[in-house]
Image (cartoon, rainbow, N blue to C red; front, side, top):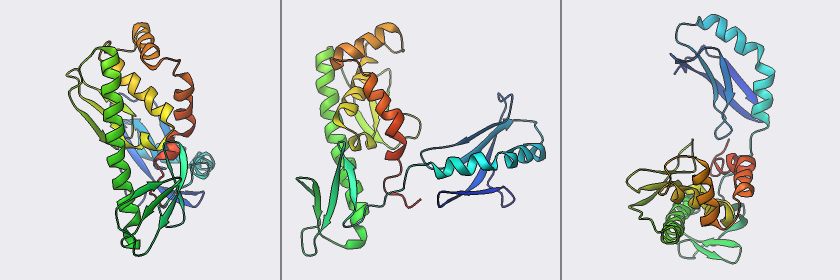
Length: 238
């Protein structure tokens, strides 16, 4: 992937991004995308296509690229007095000098003391820890309902999916699901546990998801499509 200094630079919505170029043997045409999760401007092109022609084509799309950057979700640093989502609700970050540094969730506030400059790092660590606790409990309860076994539940910060299930029963989630409404987290858990019954996306699999969840997961899938990208901007300055 190219990040050469000669690559075009695009600015929109207060963000500046350099073009990245990825050559792929299977690519048959030029493809341009702005990743809604971090604003990466990416050109995918055939392995042997001339770069000069490709860059001219990208330049002709500058208006579209910069408009797409301007439409990205707002970045959100976790600072005292600001708000952050947790389980679908915005909670105020209530930093109190002289208060213990450990994060506590009280009503609709994150209460913590400790060094002011480490508030964001400590709050994000707390969120990741809470995400694992909740996702592990939800997954094992759903697995018991499905009469299937689960090996290990883990979290990460993947860019391409909210959850994954391996053939040996390991399930891994994006920790950012804890930022979303609880119903969205539950629907994602039902999706992954249903893969312990059907390692595909067949009609039988989708029927299992609905049965385990107790409802049609379409509203939760729609929520993630509409709002999921914004969760990746938490803790970013743009």
